[in-house]
Image (tube, rainbow, N blue to C red; front, top):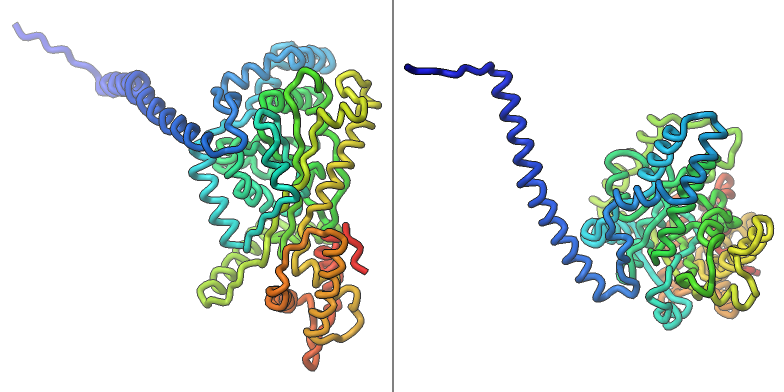
Length: 470
């Protein structure tokens, strides 16, 4: 007697999907995960043989473990209780907020993405747009930094290209962990940035619980020796001049620091400068309170028009890139030595006194950064043109003034790397750039500052105002 079992189509489909899900979960996904982990470990083993500062075990720890560790940190849990009491909410709700903040902050570092994908993109983009130059105040001292120390690169912030430029130039020495703002918190960019080891920061957040979670993550990463990159100014310079340091990040790193027992922290000053900052006019516009806020559509349309123009110039072989982009690494500062020399132990100071000491350290770092900001041809010519802004001058006269400035700068010890034999060609190209961007007006073969170019010329001249060009 035949017995036939008939099943509804929907049940067959459901069983097939469940079987597929089980197969993926038990066979395929573990195999793919094992394959990817093996490739990542190979990359780490390879790069660690040539890096001055190796990838730390903290960076290789599974992200979920770090999230759990951070959200259940003793000081975070104390902040959770205070937050719940202050806002009259159940502790579980406050804890869920802390968990969400931890997931937002903690990166998902992937060595393969960083050294294979990110480095390739950064190198191609930087070299496509600029002629990249790198210099060292004292390369021997930089190379002698304790490889087990927590190295923190502190740098001036002129452009969003800073992230790409420094990551590209530092990739032969270490893997950098950046703090990035809300601008990068969009899909799919945020996934790539997290994989590059960056962590997201709400820069103007006054939420005490969020600030505690961020503080504890920075302390965890610093104590684990993760190499970090920090912009003490807290944002892009609007007028081209170096801004005063904000103390938040530095204070997070130092408030619980014990020089006798904790891992050494070494700050490495980095000076960055460009012959052309891509966002220069947009940054200057933010200083104009009367300027109308531009819509997102206008920004997108303008950006696409700019990109199309550059592509068209490149096809005509008229695109000369945006001049030089230069990075100088300055003299490292050991926090342990600073504490020893000044008799300071940050962890034992009350908040007001601690901020005074952190401010002293921040000012010293900003001085060292300013000392190594590169003097480039366009900023140099901008300062010369401003000095003679009311005079019509020949191109030869402007270049002669610039050569005199170069001699003065070298006597002052300024970081200028223009070879004597190349000065004529370099200054001519910079002068061409100023004319092409309509910063100079021409009449009968003579040049002077364009009437409406005062702000943009000042913006570039301000980048080297550390040196008295008189």
